[in-house]
View 1 (tube, helix red, strand yellow):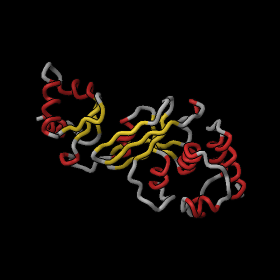
View 2: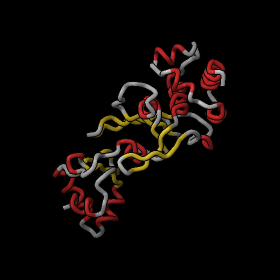
View 3: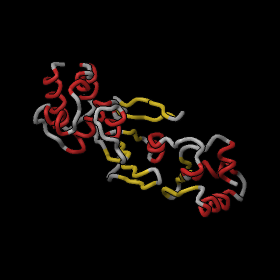
Length: 212
C-alpha cells in the first residue's frame, strides 16, 4: 500500500512530484501503484506532475506554507497571507498567496487545503528573495516574506498610490505599533527591490510618515 510506504519513509507531509514517487517506488510497477493510490483517494493530483497526500491520511497537520513553496518553484509566501502570519492584519487568510518571478500569468491550484494563488512580482531578479526568510511550522521549513516585503508586494500587485498612513491603519487594519517596528535598514533593503515607481514612492512616503 503506497500510503504505508510513504508514512514509513517519513513522507507523510507535503506534496510529491511524479519523478520523486517513481524513484521512491522503483521498478516498472511505480505508475500502477500511483494510479491505484489516486483511485483509492490516498493521493490527490494537483497538476499533471504533482500529487498531494490526502489530508485524511496525514499523521501530522499538513504545512500549507511549505506546500505553497513546492507547488511552484522559485516562490515564497507573501501578500495578505504573510501579513496575517506575522499578525500585521487581524484576519485569518484562507487563500495562500505567493509571489513568483518570470511568469506571464498568475497561477492558482485548488486543493483540499484550500486555494493556492501565485502572482508575478516584477523586480530585479537578483533581488527577488530580498526580505524573504526561512520559517518553520509543523517541522517543515518554508520561505515567507517579511512584513514590509509582503506589504510592498501587495502595493505592487494592487498598484496602490500613497494617500496617507490612515489607509494602512483603517483600510488594512495594520496597527501603527506594527509599522513602528520597521527599521530604517528594512526600508533601505526593500525599496531597492522594485523598479515600479509607485512602490518606491509609497515606501518613501511611509518611511517619512514614520520618521525612519
